[in-house]
Every structure is written in structure tokens, then in C-alpha cells.
Amino acid sequence: MAGDFSGKIELSGFREVDALAIRDLKSIAEKYATRFSEICHAFEKLTLRMKRVHGQVHSEKYEVHASTIGKGKAYTSTVTSKNLLEAVDAALEKIEHEIERSEKSH
Image (tube, rainbow, N blue to C red; front, side):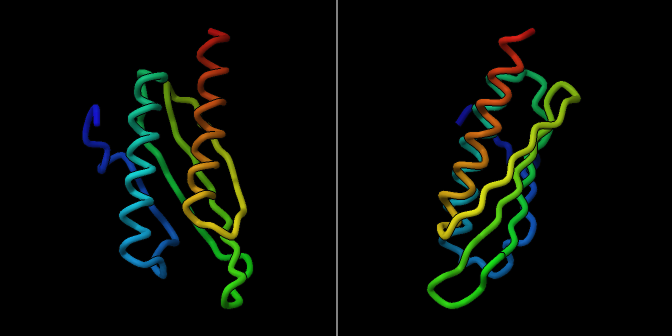
């Protein structure tokens, strides 16, 4: 990794998620934090919030809200999926594309 972003990554709503999934989630978040710092040189913070929108056993759905701040500008996305890690990855990928578009226009 290009640096330690643990102090710049905030997780909220993940209390009920098992330790293995949290480890994987943090790995995904750190990968994107590294990427965001490369394409937006003033990367400040990455926030992930999760809530269950359908909590029945074997049919859970997770709503993930992702946001980041770079150069004083906020980038956000929301993804809902049955797979929590896929939702996190998709939400952060949307932000990555938004930052890339923004950086190209400047």
C-alpha cells in the first residue's frame, strides 16, 4: 500500500458484521483510499455507512453509503446489494469514476 489510511477511513453501522468480513471490508476501503489519494492529491477522508434494508435470514440486503472528500469537494454514492462486500466495492468504484471525471475536467 502507498500509505496507512486507517486514520482517514471511518466505518459506521457495521457492528453486526463478522470479523472476517470487517477485515475484507477494510482491505477494500484501503485499496480505494490509496487510489483516491493517487488521483485526487488532496484526499482527506473516506466514510462508509451500512444499514440493512431487508433483514430476513438468507435474504439480507445491505445499503452502503460511501463518501469521500478531496480538494474540499465531496463525492458520494449509494449501492444496495445482497452481498455486503460487493456493495462496498461498487459504491467506492462509483466514487473513483466520479473523481476521475472531475479531475479530467480541471
